[in-house]
Image 1 (spheres, each protein chain N blue to C red):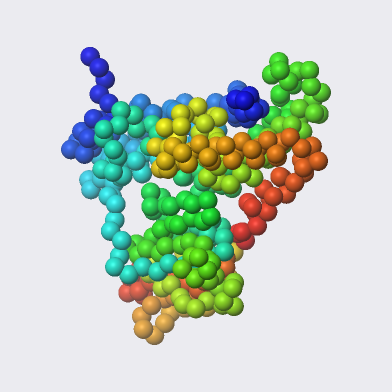
Image 2 (cartoon, one colour):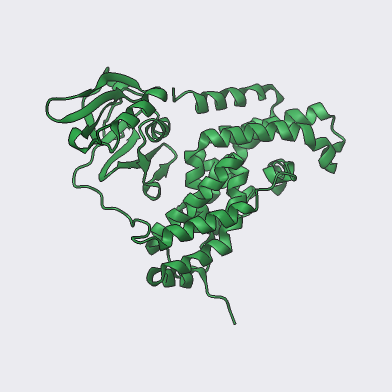
Length: 182
Length: 201
């Protein structure tokens, strides 16, 4: 009965592609990089605390959302925090000292709905970023729906707003006093 | 003299961070081979660095009574692979193509089979891998490709051994159903395409 996995075992990539081994230089390079990071003054950052307030956003497809938010909006996942379940996943994403949690929508998921179900967003996540112009270009190029253009505002921020893949609304800003002239 | 366990090395690295390099020396090549099987070759290098940076940051949480850090590292790496499922899909597709072209020559067991047949069977196995629910695919490939034990998989994925067994058994039945029915051969590719390309824009 163990033979049922034989075709799968034979399909292992390095058995199919025996002349395509990983470049041995990779190990030396990555070891050097790791040691440099470890030995750097200050070293690698330790685990960061979770803020006292952090929202949870609901998506019909939370995996697609994770992919979108990291690729398009540049959020970073706290990978060790991820919780996998057969019927859904929870992930924690951060920018700077802020955290949002994402999960699947549904009656049994705290009754949270996606904007796709609600007919539109019912809230907005406000995020300060370090380079709002670069952030805007990246989001636009990656296909985010820009719903407010990048503009200088009277209260001193430069900001834009965009919808994510299911229509949650995000506000990205930078203090204009933090922007280098020229 | 016996080698220090990974647990002892990681304990030492809490006081002397540079000691963590030993963990890379012991497990770097295993993890690189794992990643190279699962994602684009170019991405494997990036992810290898990522695995060990994450491991270093999280080392206070490592259970230092464990002799080997390998399952723990596999768990971190498997999570990263799950995050890069586009790359994983590309890797599987490349594998299907390469397998179709090579198997009749490379594998005596397949030699008797006409090349076209072998190609179809390859594509079917590889498509089936791509269609499995992620939790099942992780367990199945840690078992069949990485040859980890149930206990090691449980430690890697962070679930009880019983859950590993039930996931593995579901994955096997699904794989059998997906690969055993010639009539269903076209379906997995469609499902995979919907799953991998449907969400983002």
